[in-house]
Image 1: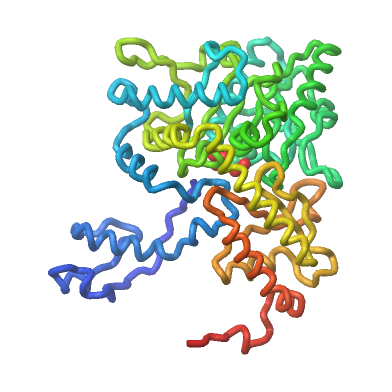
Image 2: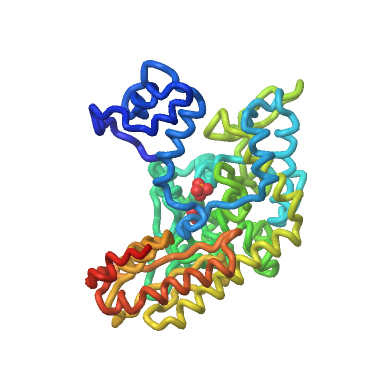
Length: 462
Ligand SMILES: Cc1ncc(COP(=O)(O)O)c(C=O)c1O
């Protein structure tokens, strides 16, 4: 959440709304001002209130053209219907909504199975509001496990500088030293060698990302695990791993079944994913699973009384909507393994098609192709005559939201554009994006990001 600071804006404006918004009372419309800083004195009819709020929301971008987000922007109407039916259920009321709790339990089991948990009866897991909360919980378990070893120094967590901001938050909030491995040359994520070099007896864990937010690449989880095994043999430091599979933990099981990154590696203590990313659910759901009960110290778990028995819970929040969990279960029922495979493969195919089309345009070079996560990053060639920020700005003119950003430490010289291909981003839309990029090129090449030809800039034909 953005932390909003109080600020009075546009004081003193009145009325000016279509008189018919007031329904049977045109005089009402004359006084309509959506409240900015204080509640209005009187209520409005629901249709009028709806119209006013909808009018404001027109200013938001079109979610499906938002190629910046990893979060699901399209679900089937049946899923929307189910979610609407569940919006009034509070996830925490396990007693009142035991079947929603049961669907959550089934989802955890399904994920543990997908991620090859060695003993399904021994796993622990829960739903969360997203990967950020899931990562906080996993990080807390790592820290508590370490603190029980009785070591005296300050705890640290080893990870690549490309981690999502939730890991920096975790370290700040829970007073853990972040040991961030910088990028180097063409290495844009963590390597086994660099990770192990930063570990010591106070390392609570190593985080590996399955699907880097920066470029969609998978980190070498198995190599990191093997290097930590070797380190444990040499020093006795038995350092667990957490896999941040916010995106990839719902892609790799279907598209890369032979890639060993999950609980098949004994060193992997916990895994998270965002149900609302490649779990294909609208925003508001994440998951975390621990390989066994030993990986989640018991004192972090609270028991709530549930159906006459005790239900263990582990969460930062209390109240939370049940709709997302029902929707997650819907995607599992609806798609099955083959459905998930087909949907994720379609996204990967579109990503590969789009990245190769962009590479062929000439002035761009790819950092990744979208063959791991269906996400790729590309940059402009040095002689292009324009930069990634120009491209991002000009694409916005057609409604495409393609973010441009600079890379972190040691590669701050590198600025890229990133495209996230998701369910609902079709080949056809990809071709439209390619055509728009191609159409922009002459202008970009001639004038950089700024259209200097005023005739073109103001061209408006009826
Ligand atoms: C690797 C990774 N971890 C964590 C997160 C945070 O996920 P969420 O938005 O579900 O909290 C993201 C979001 O993009 C991510 O890519």
